[in-house]
Image 1 (cartoon, chains in turn blue, purple):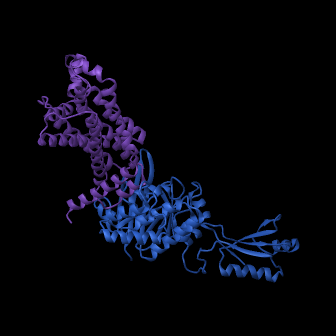
Image 2 (cartoon, one colour; image 1 turned 45 degrees about the vertical axis):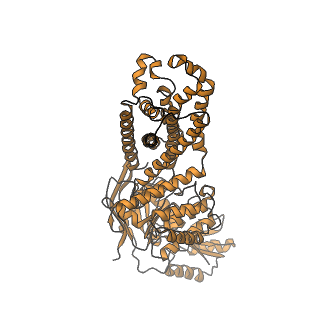
Image 3 (cartoon, rainbow over the protein chains, first blue to last red; image 1 turned 90 degrees about the vertical axis):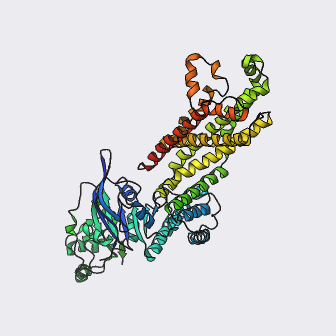
Length: 334
Length: 263
C-alpha cells in the first residue's frame, strides 16, 4: 500500500449549533488527485481550512504528509501549499513582488528567489503583467498568480479550494492543464469543486460531501454505477419503423412526439449486442442510436438531494465482468 | 539558521511588505499628517494671541505659545499616524494573503510585528516632518543637550510603539476599515484633553486628575522638559510606565486575536 498524503478519521467541526463536518473519514494516497465534491454549504471549504491548519477541528485524528495536525502544525505547513477560494494574493503590490515575497518567506536565497519567480511567471504566462499591481489582474490571471505563489515553496501536497469557480471556459481548461502537470510531477492534489465535470476530468477518487457527511466515495466510474439511469436511445424518422420497434423491444419508454425510444441498459457490449440482434431480426433500422451512461450530474443529484439517499457503499458493483466503460465519455453517438 | 534568526528574517520580510504598501500608497499616511499640522497652524496663527494671553499671566507672545504647543503636537502626530496602523491591519486581515501566511511554515508573529515596526517607522518619519514644520514657523529648543535630544527621540519611539500595538489590537478587533478608524479615534482625541494645548491648571478642578494622569500628559510634560528645560518630575517615569503597559497590553490583545481561528 502506498503512503497516505492525507488521512482523516472522524473529522468533526461545528460552528455554534450548526454541524459543518459530522465525522468524515478521508484517505488520499500520495501522488493522486482527490476531489471533494458537494453543493454550496456542504462543508468543503471548512474541510480544506482544517486540513491546511487554518482552522482547528473539534475532533478527529488528522495526518497530513505524515505529521499529526494537532501536534506538529508547522511540519504540516512546510509540506503543503494552499490556494483558497478567495484569492490569496497581495493586491497592492505587483505580481513579481508577490512572488518574491513568497520566495523570501520560504527563505530562498535572493538569487534562487529570482530564478524561481522568473520561471513560474513564465510558466503561468504572467511575464507581461509581472510589473503591474495584482489588484488590476483579471480573475483568471489572479488565480494563475495564486497558484504560482503556492508553488514557490515546491509543496508536495496542494489544496485547491474551488480553483475554477468564476473562471471562463478557457481559463478553466488552462487550470485543468496546470493541475495535470502538477500531478505528473508527483504532487498530491486535494481539490474541492462544485463542478462535476471537473472532478470527472481530474480526480482519481471523488468523495461526495453532503450536509457534513460523505454521501459516497469512489472513482468517477464507480460513482456513476452507483445509480441507475443508463439507457440506450433510439430515434426514428419513419413512424412505421418506430411502431414496430415498440413492439419488438421489451421494457421500452416511448416518446411518441419525438419518435424516440429509451431502453434501460448498462451500456455493456453484451446488452448492446442483444438489443441490436432484436432490431436486426425484426428488420428495423433506427436512424440514430445513442448510449447514455449516467454522468456525475445524475450521481450528484441523486446523492445530495437529501431524500433519495443511496444505500451505503457496499452497494458498489464489483469491477470485474464489465466492458471498458470507463466513464470518461458521457455519450457515445454512433 | 537558528529559530530566532529565522523569526527575525520573516519579520523583516513582512516589514518590507508593509513599507512597500506605505510607499506605493502614501495617501493614508499623508492624510493623517494633515490633522496635527492643521492644528499646529490653527493654534499658533488663529488662536495664538488669545492662548498666549491666557497663559502665565498674559505676558507671553506667540513664540512662547509655539514652544508650549509643539511637544503636544508631536505626540499627537503619533496618535494620528497609528490610526493608519489600525486601518491597514484591519484591511489586511480581510485579505486572502493573510490566510496564506497562516498556512505557511513561517514565524507566526511576523505578520503583526511587520505591521508594528512599519507603523513605528512611519510615526517617526511623520514626527520629523511635523517637527520640521514647527521649526519653520519658529520653534526652537532652548537648551537641549545631545543626550536630551536622544532621550526625546527614545521617548517618542517608545510612545509610538505603545500606541501602535494598541492600534493594531483595535484593528484586529474591528470587522472593517471604517470601524477600525472609528475605534482608533480616541488616540487622536486624547491629546485635546491633555496638557498639549492648555496647562492643566486652567481646566475645571474635577477634570484635572483625568487630564493629569492620562498617557499623553506625562509624555508631553517629559518631552517639554527635555526640549525646553521645564520641570519633568515624576512625569518621566509615568510616561515610560504608561508606554510599557500600553505596549504589553496591545501586544497581548493583538496576538491573542491573531491566534484565534479566522472566521
